[in-house]
Image 1 (cartoon, helix red, strand yellow):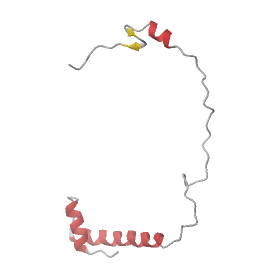
Image 2: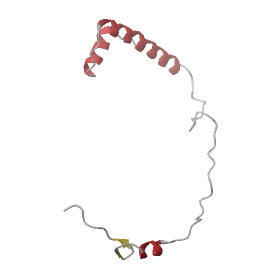
Image 3: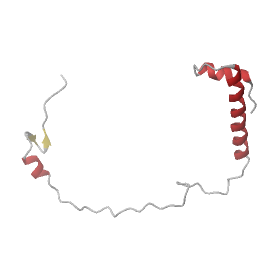
Image 4: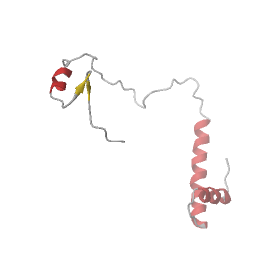
Length: 95
């Protein structure tokens, strides 16, 4: 993909970025380098490579999903100011 200084200025204008003539030339060189790198990366055949979920071959250590605490909702609701049908009642704040 080839860009011109006018393309850089147009994009800068759309992004509402003020850019001088010298800056637009520098940005053009940088963007051309980025697009060149993208073209090189797209030229690589990756059809035989399986997608990875992480850049490094790592496995997350997880604990077993086991209940380790007892149900204490009755205890917690016994000290609540207002409870009805197992739900906490709170004051209305929006009218």
